[in-house]
Image (cartoon, rainbow, N blue to C red; front, side):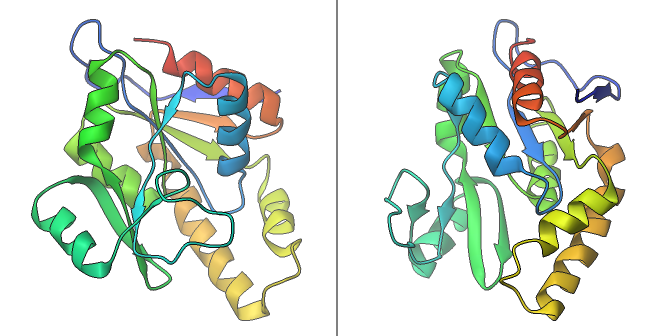
Length: 198
């Protein structure tokens, strides 16, 4: 059973409006798996689609997995303040379109962002009422097993991932709540319950 650890309240959103929920945590902890499970069971939860300068991978569709944009288009989004947060990762840029998030919140729909630590910090600055949820591994050993278990990456890449994971785990106290990912079903249910608290 996973356990939710609250750490004080964030500022309240406007009365009657749902709060933006941000899910973050170290690489390999299972964020994408949890979000996919939650959305399959509850398609009413709106997951923000990021804009990226990365090229589409086979099977990816524009507007579904990502909005695929050129470097110039991304520059314009940044310059016009159209991104809630953005970051560079492995030579590509990723960002959350602000207008779509606000539009869905205005409609009273629960909105979920699945982003990295840097992005979560930027969202906290841009929208102080957002609820930040940290997804933690059951143990460091389990996270190492997940990150090294793929067997597809060279040792130096794995070492970089582990170093990044140590940094991300150290930031847990910055989040409002921690969910420990011992079970995808349990943690999805707890995340959904948090999202439905006004």
